[in-house]
Image 1: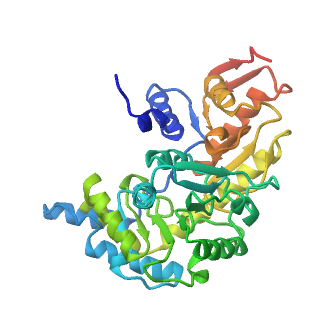
Image 2: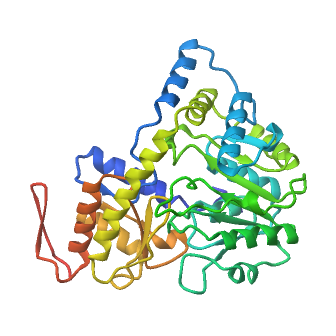
Image 3: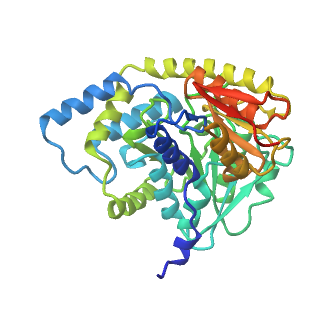
Length: 405
């Protein structure tokens, strides 16, 4: 069988694979705990459900414009004004089937084969593969100071004449790091000066803690013309707990949005009109669900941090955003894939291997589930890898016996 060079270069999404594994084990009745999840457990806002139900009852479920309905664009404009203090035009906006598609279409619109895209590590698992899908070259950058927060020198020393774009994800998946305003200011100004596209993946920007607020890139932009290199990515998946609705968007200069819409039109056409109605309902409706979710996550975060800090040998830089903790397990096992598989096999806990996020020896642990799962999940991990743990562990009525060192 003949497979394309690009097809052969693309790996499967480990996060999606583990989600599938969790679903299979749970269906079999296994006492599995998912600490690798990337979706809040809250229900979608009632305004979203009401809006989609009302439109479904009308029976008028038709094609949507390839770049989003007029009402969807109005909602995105409203969101941008409310959260970024910037008034944009409908021509600056495209709605897509999730923030992932918005990023993918943006990359396809700006990249040529062998172009390079720079992004800090740890990074979201799909960045590397999305860049490769365009025939371009991903350039991950590991901060030299051992933190999860890049410095401009980390970025600039990896920029070459082939660099077409830089991706910044703050708050960051998987580390939860919120990059300081000074860095965002520098990166915005640098990209304007060098003519490099800056893709701001802001999907978690409403989920921050300890009074931390993500910097607003619009505060530092000087060029708002059609030569602007700033691309803002967002969506309803995380803050509105609407992961399955698959509505995201991009805000950028009008010429780029026009090209992105042409590409999207041939890929998938416009996102489902039903799901757009739900997203419009969420954005235009009562916003209390966001703060309710944020408060729940902040409490879960405290519990997870307490559990991790009581676990000798683990190293954690506390997350200030998202709903992940990126934990250094290298004192116990440097191969994160091996460790992830071991924990799933021995104690039925799913955790995402750090190597998939560009940093070996780490696991991404999610605190968007229940407090019970957080506590029990980390207790199981400790029992599995800490040699000082007792020989037996009960999971419900099932007794596990340590048969490994």
